[in-house]
Length: 331
Image (cartoon, rainbow, N blue to C red; front, side, top):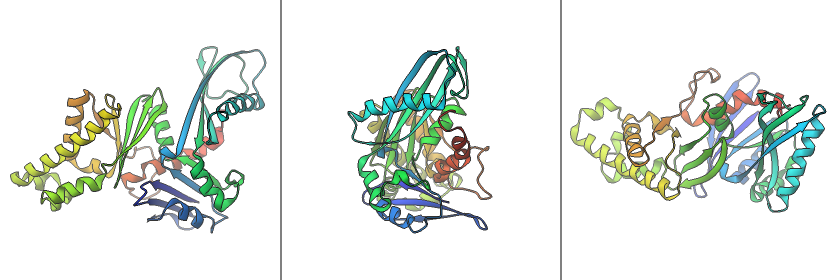
């Protein structure tokens, strides 16, 4: 198995790769190549399962509710027919390509159920249809022909299973998922468990590092909190730098209409105590809400190694994909 997790930036592409081999476990490395090159490289290993966790901005998400009084037990074919009807309707206006569907929030006669097939009575559920943008699809098809005919290839939004984890395990249905990466910050607005809006901000970790450099405090980027506390002058510069960065980030969120709800933050920067304190304080003052650093959950298998915080999306996927494959469309 190869799992490739994209950190998209047109100028500085980056892909984290996790490789699973039977006798060696999980190996990990980073490639700095554009997606087209990564796809081409993947074709050299046709016997491996190829999983691509791509930036969420490459996808579109459609949702619809099913409420129906069913007298005859629902079959798999019934479910497929309902989904096909909605896909045909969406395809009249969308140029993107249907990728997969998920059925959740299933209720039968008002009672929550895990599966839809085999049930009858008053049913209700929500269907999520995920589409891949045409440009990305063509990049895969250039290498694989019709990529949808390649059973060894799985293409997913990078944060999709993290959003599902927040919803199902932490009971969080509305929030901002903020991913501060090297070059960019990706912002995903979740409302009622749905992708509502996806944006990116040109304020990544490298922007903050440049601010440290401009203020002559680069070395304090790598100091722990206790060492910074011992130098009041340096601490003052660090605090001012972090405040400036946090205010810029909050201002951009406000301009995009994406503040005002709890933020779950994915980034190695959450290990910076001063940053978390200042960002939380700045965000709370502006939006009267707060920041929650998203660490790797204790119940997530890390496969015998201490993983970096950048790995959280891949780890959540690896821990859940067997269950998802088993349940499929909520069958």
